[in-house]
Amino acid sequence: MEHPERLDWHDGQPISRRFGDVYFSRAGAVQETAHVFLQGNRLPERFAAMPAAGRFVVGETGFGTGLNFLCTWRLFERAAPANAQLDFVSTERYPLPAEDIIAALTPWPELEPWRARLLAQYAALAPGWHRFDFAPHRVRLTLLVGDARDTLPALHGLVDAWFLDGFSPARNPQLWEPQLLRTIGRLSAAGASVTTYSCAGAVRRGLGDAGFEVRKCAGFGSKREMLAGDYRGPAPTRARRAPGHVAVVGAGLAGCAVASSLARRGWEAVVIERRDGIAAEASGNPQGMLYARLSGQDGPLSQLVGTGYQHSLRLLRRLLPCDGMAWSDAPLLQLAFEAHEQRRHDALERLAWPRALLHGVDQTEAAAVAGVALPFGGVVFPGGGWVHPPALCAAMLATPGIDMRAGARVAALRESGGSWEVRDDYRLLLRADAVVLANAGHACELTQSAHLPLHWNRGQVSLVPASAGLALRAVVCAQRYIAPARDGVHSVGATFERSADSAVRAGDNAENLAALRAFAPALHEALGGDRLDPAALAARAGLRCVSPDYLPLAGALAEPQGTPLPGLYASVAHGSRGLITAPLCGELLADLIDGTPALLPAQLVRALDPCRFLPQPPVPSP
Image (cartoon, rainbow, N blue to C red):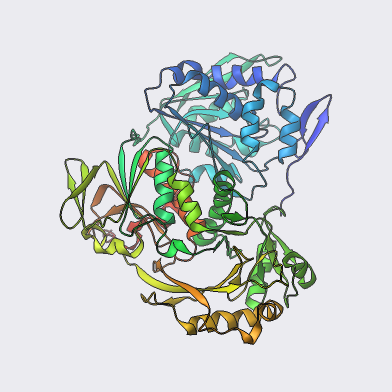
């Protein structure tokens, strides 16, 4: 695990302990940012000239203290139209802890309102990509935690203005390598600008080779010169679109998430649900676990789960009270109940995750975390906890701009003149510029998505009455899980079987209780042990939609032959991970529909593409 970055101080000036370089000029940090990056990129006039509902993207190398972001956000609020939106994408290999950001920016009280809103969401960050939503919902920060030489080439989107603000080329040469500068050129929109305090010849030549026409300008403070430039190289056609009307089919976690993400960007969303209320199917369990089952390997599923876990935690902190009814941030224990699990946990310990997010515990420590004797150690996610999924669905649907229509079955879609007609069995329900199918396996009932390779997995949760003598303090996971009591009842589950039968079964209750006895015998006994009657226990069975590779399908749809279906998207097959993957995929779909930079790396966007199962065209013969 790489050690986190920390600051040293010299005469009140923050200095990187790792690189031995200053974070900003003695002459004034806010003034330096305004001169080099805001004025240098002509942002005051460019923000003021944005059209209504316009989008602007800033890219940055070196997030550091967040100073440039805060100054850009403040300028955007003051200069841009009221409904314009800003995407700020920044890279940082060694993110600072919040206390160092506070200390570094304290001398500039004029930034306090923006700093406070950043720090309300900023916490320990694992390597990966992180999305923060601000102002309210006009400004998004996407922070790519990792080596910029790895993260920037994976960016899915185009940038309008670049801030090159790494430590000096002499102290941090990796952030100024020619290949990285060429990547910056490739990610530039037509007419994109770039500025940097550095005038090093290698930087000037590298930017020129990347397609920028660069010039020397007056520097700030003691620096005589700086560089500014404009991109003149080839640029792909921008695919951004103004907000319109979107129909979202399904009011479970997936549908509510994508409707909320789009509504926050100005879209008018209509959510259509065939049942009489929200979260009526798999999203209706009384408790859902934030169970981030990481593999320790850097595959698509582990990347998705790790990113989605942290994304969902930020969402919950923003939307729900942590009151033990809507949400609980109790720890989540994953027990090493067999050798394979112990090897997986050993791999997790080698991940570069901060201890505040994940760490190992022995048997004694695990028991102390849970508040009950346990036969194994494992790993603990200190803020993992559980959620009442219907409460999260309701909170997401409360986003202004969403209209909910329950008791309406979508039977057909028809493309007509660049928009979509959404119909039931008898009539037109509405017309929309885009449609998102978030109705799990029911998506296969529609002609355009009948070819999707989806199937149902049945899962049953047993509802066990709490015991007066038991105060379980953590979610405990092994072959099954048990959660701390909500409203006097523990959720114990869940079974996993390929089946479309949603009837409650006493046999499934018996399976859940037998698993609980195996991984937590003291818990099992405290709840009644063998005196518990599986046939008398309440339970809830639901159907989870699953794909062949157990990854969700999130993206644009196409016909079986590969012909695109413009304006038609899906967010389905979240399986048993919906609390972790559905909010993330909702935000990803909003990025793809809007044409703004995606919050996931390009290779993961491709791994989630619903078209990945279509036959690939043959490779031409040489």
